[in-house]
Amino acid sequence: MDIAYWIAAGLLALFYLYGGGVKVVRSKEQLRPMMAWVDGMPMPAVRALGTVEVLGALGLVLPPLTGIAPWLALAAAVGFVVLQIGAVRVHLGMGDRAIALNLTLAATAAVTAWLATAWL
Figure 1 (cartoon, rainbow, N blue to C red):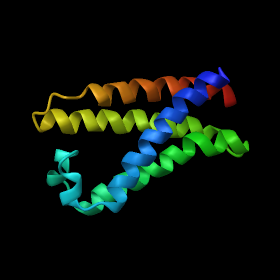
Figure 2 (cartoon, one colour; figure 1 turned 180 degrees about the horizontal axis):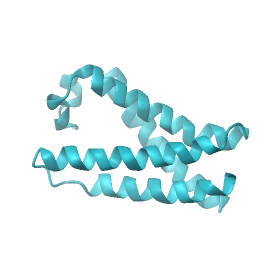
Figure 3 (cartoon, rainbow, N blue to C red; figure 1 turned 60 degrees about the horizontal axis):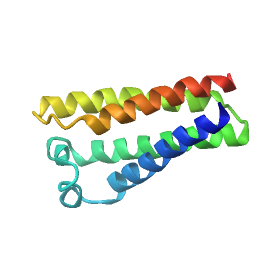
């Protein structure tokens, strides 16, 4: 179970560290080619979302590594499931049917949440 958790959590953490970091540091013009939805959101909301993603990625990795509040890993994984449900709603609301990545991330986060229960 530990190896499976670290594979799933590691992949999610890498994805969200990159994606969140990009949202925090890049301008709307730089984000637009890869994230068309940014036009419909104010930049402070995009930056906040990026910050939440970076913190969630850290929450997947640091608590199990340190043994301090390991339940935070479960909270981070569940948070990513909720985040992707919201992302699917945003994409579908914009008429964008390309939600395979969002569904894959939601499924991976759900599996990670299940694996994280080993630390409870």
